[in-house]
Length: 465
Length: 98
Image (cartoon, rainbow over all chains, first blue to last red; front, side):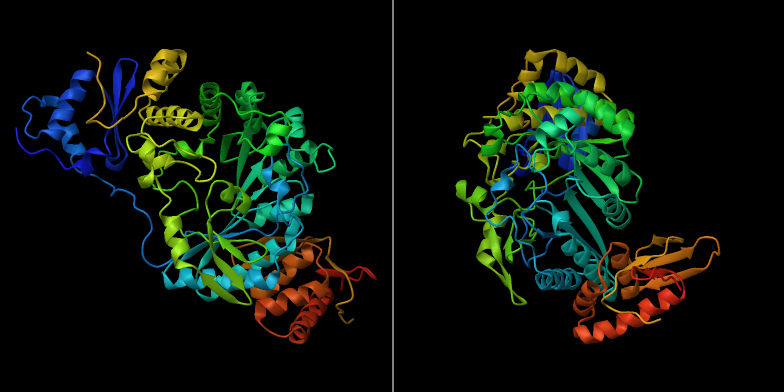
């Protein structure tokens, strides 16, 4: 018995109870295993008090847990190096979604000037070139980007033209409502690389949540767009907003999307409460119900070869920040403001955040290095609640604006509960143990035991006798 | 036949096209004739197919090529003219396609 292992090793090895078994999960070691309580004790002793002589068959497992495959994720440092460029062509939109907070944008009719687009792309591609990136990436956010289609068209051609001069390739991604004509859909399907289409379900749900601004049905138009987008080269993903009233239909929605269209993935996102959603009487689903319905929907999607997405539970991601914030992503608004986040400034300010990074005007870029450093500082390493959570390198604390975490470790809120369940699902799926997840979902007490464990760190977790 | 930025153009109905990363290939159904468009000419074709007016394309080209609008116009009109002669483009005024 001798030296205790370095604390830095212990903070990335987790144990989660699962119906009498224990999941050993070490995302930085690429390792997950189901073992019994006695094995956990031996593994813990083997790691924390080196030289445990009773390891036996666990020797290889302890060996694998003694050296990481991946370094711990760290905040960005050094020169500003964007993961991608975000453009907001306009905050305007042709839909009047019942839950959308963007309807209260200060300047919904502003459209980005093409000279501003050119300057933003020139700046970003120069940065990417200086950093030796062969592939550049431009994401369009809104409002609805296609309400300023000349901005998209110009961005697309200008970026490709400039990139080809530097032997770069540009990928384009758009988050869109799909409410535009067939020729524009065909263009998007044949030109862009990735399309994230918001479609909340069949006609009754879509038209309740996402009607046109005049209140008329958008379902027919958007479903037709989805069919056209399914036939193109672009990767089509659906984003489905889920409320307390629609949660029961999630498996049906999953089946319908797979049968009618050809998505590569479907993301289910619980409603984010907002003033418009409250006014419309829409509520987020209960997190336990959401997790249950998500799992059923995910199994349907996966049977069709379609990926189910709940971004915070993406166990392939190892990160310290969930979103563009802190990843040096410049998101340019129609007025030239460069921000770290695509949400409205009003929304960050309500949470006491200022996510402006700088300004682009008259061809000049002003980037505030103090603001960049502050954005980089918004990460999971600064969240005590997350320190012992097995999801911390995946969810990374979630949205900096909409997910306000309590100060003490192990106090999990609605978003934490569903994230922990769905991350557990994804890990068990990777172990080919969907059957165990099915059993867990049937046993609320066992599921709560897993979810409400105050710390998952192997050194701190309590074990049943 | 001379092209004009005041006219509206549209792709001839017997022309189909495929877009690649850096180029667009036009094929005339029936004859099998084909044209390979690259660089800014592929951009012009894309914009015409989306219904942009020639005047609007001039503005795009001026920004794209970093040239004055007059220069952009001087580059655009011969291309439109050539496409009309080859029957890949029609103008809305007379429906002329070559």
